[in-house]
Length: 160
Image (cartoon, rainbow, N blue to C red; front, top):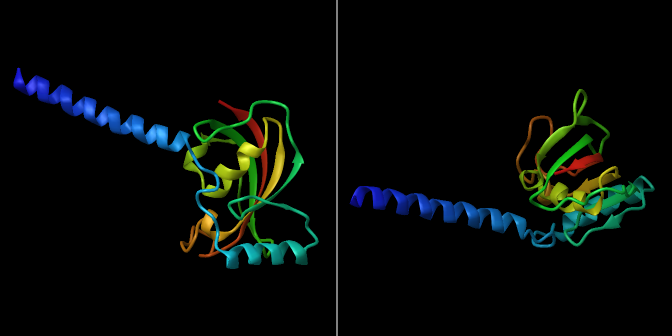
């Protein structure tokens, strides 16, 4: 009997931890991580050099909304379905959805996506200009060099 009670206690404790993790990611603070001034300036320089007018988010990323959309707005706990094309500031493409849209929980994406996609509604389109701190940081990710500004053209197709 003691073993059964102990087993139930362990399972209940772990369930509480899992619930806490869910609550933490659902109470996401979009301005909680802010890119350093040097990275923000680098994105601003890129935008200026390319005559791009973009809005600065409180986190330090920049974005343009081509189409707002009319459907549901995602939250950090939403599953989102979207198409994207990613490129570097030199124009080199590094990833895209070519055969099917990506469907994933928003909380699993880089900070720039977590901050950007909730600015749209389903059917919306935007471009994200993400400084390294809000992207992949000092880690090389496949063809993306460390400390890269990354640019994504995104079309939000669905929110669950």
